[in-house]
Image (cartoon, rainbow, N blue to C red; front, side):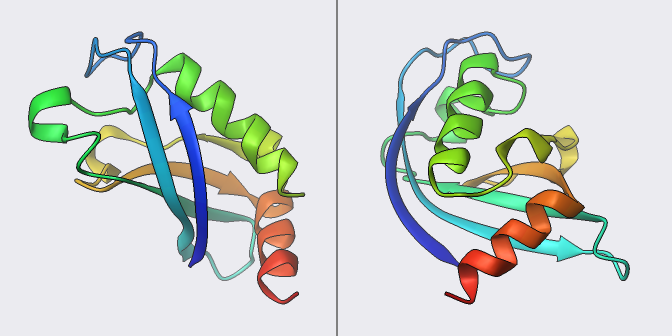
Length: 114
């Protein structure tokens, strides 16, 4: 896992939450990669003291969060344009699940091996 410290915001535009608030992001991890390294799952972990899915809902599908996340990933030299929300059933209590492609996987693996 890549430990990070970044605050991203939600704007309440998601299907599962109308909350607009700051979300401290604490880590990035690849939860799954297929055999061909062409598809995987990125898990973006957040501080559950600041965002509680039972009270706040799922961050999943929030437009501002995804926009800010992509910019943050690019600032880390990761392929942020190769990231999009996965499905609702993939979301966790302490992370947002996103689909990633081969460009992101390669950039994440390169960063992890530095």
